[in-house]
Amino acid sequence: MRYNTDTALKEIISRSEDIRKKKSAGTTALLTTVSGALLLALFAVFSAFVDRSSAGIVFAQYGALMMDEAAGGYVLTAVISFTAGTGITAAVSRLRRR
Image (cartoon, rainbow, N blue to C red; front, top):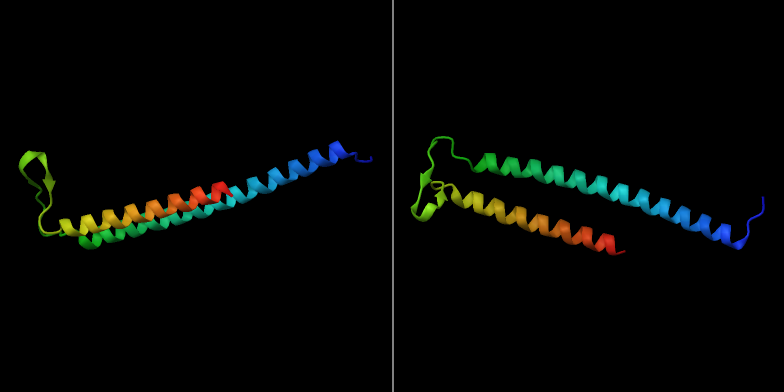
């Protein structure tokens, strides 16, 4: 069967969409793997900063919930996690624009 211009163009568009879908699936798999690795790293950091000798939680004034001296580790972990999440979101946004 011979192709005319319209069917050739439709075939090219169809193949390019297939290529984009495959690339998107690969990117999604990569980002899922990276997110899982970051989650495991987050759990590792949490376990490193948890003080197992003190089991109590101190309720402070105005309803604030504070851990004892180990609160700095949690704050550091939260800041690092937020920064990593922001970076991943920016990378995904840039990849989607291309």
